[in-house]
Length: 477
Image (tube, rainbow, N blue to C red; front, side):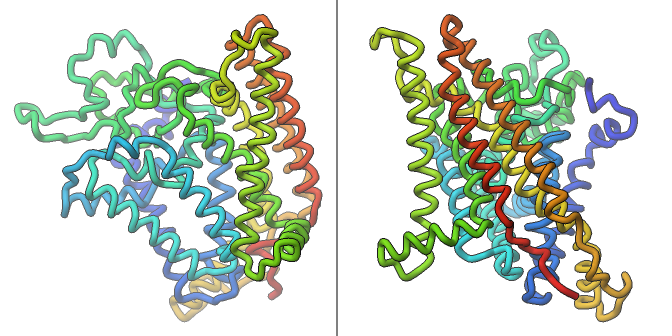
């Protein structure tokens, strides 16, 4: 199945201005969020800056990743603005070799998660607006200096999150016929399509993330921009259906990425993605406050920052070291009786860490889906109120503050279903990876990772059974 061959959607996606159109829509939404974030009410549930960002955008992002792919990066408004800035100042430098990894993006992803909890960003419309402006500023500052898409590939926290999550997606940009690429002399999908007779003039850029399509495996680093589709002179690139999550068990060398099992940063990103999902959900329950109060009393700490930092260290460093590191050490022992034949623990982690991603995706979907479903209709009265705030009259009618969404109890089965499906996906991937790396002892090799998955699943179920904070929706008209 090739989505680009579909009558309506496919025709739109093949249109050269399709991405720009989607970007303009999201840029307009970002402008509204920033404007109302600065000028609207300070009460978060009545401000579009908070409601659209923390209630609707996050939930819809996960839904889009689940049913299609990296749709947000396709329509990223940051790239649209930075393209405009590049017309004023063309970049001339290449991205530093020492920074060509995910470590910067991982650090910024953790920083954003930490800042979200420390400063209660869901309750600060103006703070949310400043965060969005910081994203725009960083994209412009980096990409007017460096060629390619260094911000997207190495820096953007949202991008790194989307790259990992899109491993679950059912669609992938792929070549239709590899043999056609073998006879291609221009490699326009990478170099860009040049104007006839003027080889220095690019009329359609190729992949800015340097993903050579014949050697591309999976969705990691793919922004779904479809520039390669526009650049290919042979119409040989499609948006093809594939087995969701299969790429996470595939260790073939990949264009621009190499072999995943040799990339410690990719393994750490998968671990942070999974354990961060559990931490982010736990942080909106009552027990987290008990943990923070106990730490403050025990260590005689008087400010929230150090206490929250200890919680993050425990959830994102100590817990993975114990569970993931322990599973790797146990797998080494189970696959071979001889110490000399056992794979290194680090290699085992790099091989199996990606199996945790489906569970992590299920946790993010359960968490963000909770906010989306319980606050699905809040955007209507908040938008009505925003029009009154910005235009001075009720052009969309008087706000209907009783419109909220589903009851939390009705959402719980959906949450548990998402977690359960994610857990089954992780167990299946652990078995596939074990069968690939240790065919004679596959069951024993996969067993420790099954145990880790079960432990995290049980912890997740306990978290979602706790009363959740109704962030962004707990208002009374």
